[in-house]
Structures are given as structure tokens and as C-alpha cells.
Amino acid sequence: MSFKDLPIMPDKKKGVLLFYPYVSKKSAKNIKKKLSGRWLGQGPMVDKFENNFRKKFAKNYSVIATGSGTDSLHLAYILAGLKRGDEVITTIFTCTATNIPMLYMNLNIKFADVDINTMNISVKSIKKLITKKTKAIVVVHYGGLPCDMGEIQAIAKKNKIVVIEDAAHALGAKYNNKPVGSLCDFSTFSFQAIKHFTTGDGGMLTIKNKSLAEKAKRIRWFGIDRKKKQQGIWKNDVFEVGYKYQMTDIAATMGCDSLNEFNKIINHRRKIYYTYLNELSKNKKVKCIHDEDKKKLHGAWLFTILVNNKDYLQKKLRDHYIETNQVHFRNDRYSIFKKFVKGKKFPNMDYLENRYLVLPLHHKVSIKDVKYICKLINKYAK
Image (cartoon, rainbow, N blue to C red; front, top):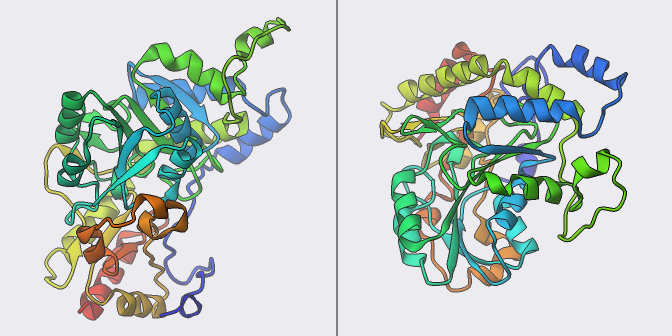
């Protein structure tokens, strides 16, 4: 099946789109007010968004808002003290944004295979990759399903290495009743267009070691101490390389509005998620990517199934105006990562590569939609 067979589905009333941005209805009015005020770039709304996010997801952590989830990841890698040549274990299956910042820093990427049942990073694979040169483990909670954090943190503690969470999928997820964002040394989130809610684009970084917060704020803004600069002190030294990774007050306004509505957002998404699970899990031709581990509360960003006739099923669903896709792709297939995967094997990823399919899950999807989609899947899955 070629790309021409499945063009991007038009935004029409007929059919169900794979993704749809969540923007609070209050944001149009609030942004209009913001546009007539003093602060458009990084200002008091960014501080407010950070504070509100910290209270909800990362108590006792420092929280830094950024221009994107990728910005947050790069900051996390810098703050973790990673240096050129350091070995970092990461998952083979993720958005390239997880791993591209490692290329900025000339890190030695060690790709781990995935767990065949959850599509999260494989603990067994991590153990095989640990060496004396390993400085960090980067985990991605695929679709919103928490990784096996107890085992991963035990490995990290034993080997005295840092754990960094790419939690772009996992806003609202929990492990052992603790919110993702308050589990590890560093956690990063994304507010890109198709996430739980969007700020146009944006990210958040949570930091366990609060002494790193001021450094994070400097690096976020060219290495400049903004507080001193705003106090009118002209002569401020810049002694570390920084970036333009700040969030704007316009984005933060959107973030505050949606954050106030997050319980409604996540409750609807979980209803959709568990309707899929209930409707499809009885079909022996369909495997749902899920984990019954009671320590894990799913963030319900993606619902993913495995079928043997993925291309055929995707085409039949599109014939009925249901948009599906694979969303993420194994990173070892990209040229930029070739030198890190020569001679390496990823048997679980090989098995999953042509079987997984992501179904629509967002605020515009109804329970009726889900049951219709499941009816089609149960009919056409082979």
C-alpha cells in the first residue's frame, strides 16, 4: 500500500480523524486580552503555568516551561551532565525528538529493544546494554502506558546512573500512585498540537534536584540571568552556552486554560481507551497494547492494536472514513542513527514493525464512534 492510497483525511464532519487539537474555548478570549497587554513573550503567564503544572503533576519538583518537548529533552540531557561520548540507553521505538538532541551533544546512543507486549523499552534489553560508560537511561511511556519504572530505577540506582523520562505521551499517567513527572531525576512533557492539550507548541521539564532550576532558566534563555537583567543590571556575564527555549505568555495562556480542564480531558480519553479495550480484547485476531499491572495508570494518549493484516485493515477503515496510522517508527531505520545500530538486532521491534496500528482517541471521538470502529475492526481483522 503506497502513501497515495491513504492521503491525509480532510477535516469534515463525515468520518473520524486520528488526532484533533484540544484548545479550551476560553483561550480565544484570554489570548485576545493578552495581545493587547504588555507581555507576549516569556512573562508572568509562563510563571503561572509552571506553578499550576507543578501543583498538579510534580509537587516538590522544579518546573520549567519551554518552547517544545524537544527543548525540554535537550535541557534535561544538559542538566544531567551528559558529555560528548557518554553512553545513553534509549528506546528504539519513539518519536525521533527523543533521540535527536543526543546527536546535538555527540552522545553515544545505545538503542534498546522494546517489550513485545507494551512497546515500551525492554528491561531485559537495558540490562544487556549497561556498561561502566553508561550515564543515563531514557524511557518513553508509549501511548501513555508507564514503563516498568520500579525495575528501571533499581537498575539505575545500582549502577549510579540518571533516569530521564520522555513523558510526552503520558500526561496524567501514574506509577505506584505517583504522577509521571514526579518519579525520576528529569521528566519532559509536550504540548504540541496532537497531545492531550496544546499550547500551539510547547513543553515542560520537571527537575528533582531543585538546585538545578536556576541553571535551567539560564540555559533556556541564551545563558542569560533574566532576573538580573530585568532589574536593570546591564553587565551580566554569560558563562555557559544557552538556547532560545522559552515558552511565550500566549502559549502559557492556552496552557493554563486547558490545565484547568484537564480532569475532563483525561476522563473522556480514558472512557474511550477502555471502550476500545473492552470491545477488542475478546477478539483473538486483535492484540491490544495494554498492561494489567495495577501499579500503572494509563495516560490514554494512544490506543494501539496488533493485527497480522495491518495494511488491509487500515485501508478498510479508511474506506469507512476512519483515519488510523502508525504515528511513530523505529529509529534504527533513519540514516541519522545508522552508526549506532550497525550489527545490532531488535527482534521484538522486528516482530511488531508491520503489525501495530493506532486508533483515534481524542475529545472529538464519541463512545458511539469507538463502538463503530471496533465493529469494523472485528469484521476485517485477520
